[in-house]
Amino acid sequence: MLPSESRIVGDPFFTRIVRGVSTVLRPLGVHLVLMMTGSDTGDQVVADLRQGRLDGVILVHTYQADPLPSLLLRSRQPVVLSARPAEPMPITYVDVNQTAGGALAAQHLVERGCRNVATITGSLDRPPGHDRLAGFRAAMAQLGQPDVVSVEGNFTRESGAAAMERLIAEYPDVDGVFIASDLMAEGALPVLRKHGRSVPDDIAVVGFDDSSAALSCDPPLTTVRQPVEDMAAEMARQLLRQIDRVDAPVRSVIFEPILVVRQSA
Image (cartoon, rainbow, N blue to C red):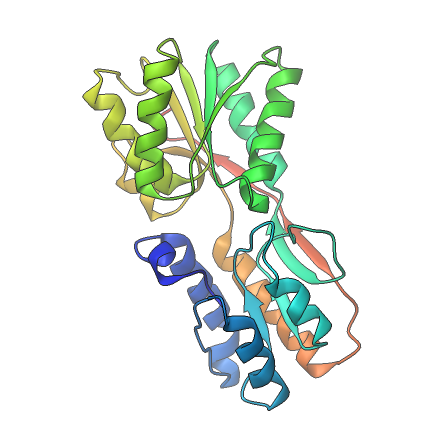
């Protein structure tokens, strides 16, 4: 299950999820059904599960007040989340170490000599946005820069551009920015060019994901890589484990990020 269609159009993250899940399911002859979440999605999915039209659910991206994870959990049907749940609950999920990823970005910017560092966050009502910011801020504090300016985006190109406009207007001395997704960075970099800021000479920029958007950026983006295809394949394996065994124990599988250095920082 994916977020509403407006969010997934043009976002390479979701294509990578589908590709990774398919590498596990296709050889087994298991069909992948894509569904968009909506206000009435939960009840329909539970009904489909109970009536055997679906065998299990991989739920991609949830937000703080999302009732869907709890609803699926109460239904006692196979379900796997693509990130840690927004609220603690006994549910299987696969994630990258988001806080460690934020820390990698902080360390790289400080090692480059950046002294006025800011961040454009993802949606803070979603665990990835919250955790990337937390890891970045904690590392910056340990590195001697506790006062990090942040502007919130929502993981889209448009929000990255708008956040960078605000950042440049309100904090013109910024010389390093951690942008919490490559897609937002792709929107933000043209704003810097418009304002006459050279990357990386005037401002160093680090993204997150290592998606195709990182290579589309000008200059190519230094970014924190999360192995999305491998993570998605693990989601599929965890779901099949639950389908095969009703009493399968709850698991959390965490992948480690790595920093991919290119020309933006």
